[in-house]
Image (tube, rainbow, N blue to C red; front, side):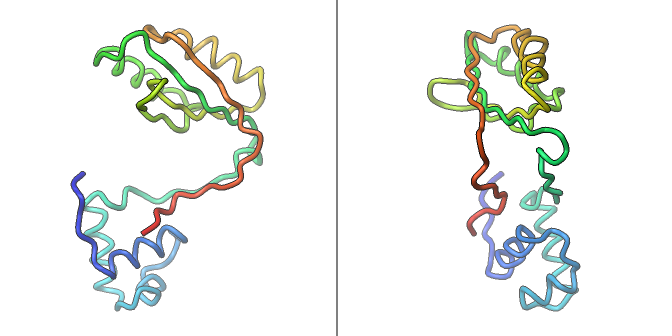
Length: 155
């Protein structure tokens, strides 16, 4: 998406919604210094422009039985379009993969995977990831502790 020029009110709206996506339009308008109608129009314009992609609920993974968080560096045999598409299609159907980034550097992809325990992670690795045609190597790093988490951009 091309860069969009955001004015002071747009930035205030985004900052407020990144802190609390559940703000009512009236409360949001009050926080950013607009009346409710113009505020709502701006929010809709930010959504239509693809700047606001959605609103999320953040859940504690460990509290819902997914305490294992693993970062995987995946290298493909060849980084050609067909291999990239095959890999991305495969991982799109796996709920354990909660993030996937195409990378530069030593690995082709960086994945974040969650699992209830090591056995489940091992099953995912053996029954899913290693079966994707074109995967050359996988390096796993286990997260011991999450020290920061944020989705708010530094506007």
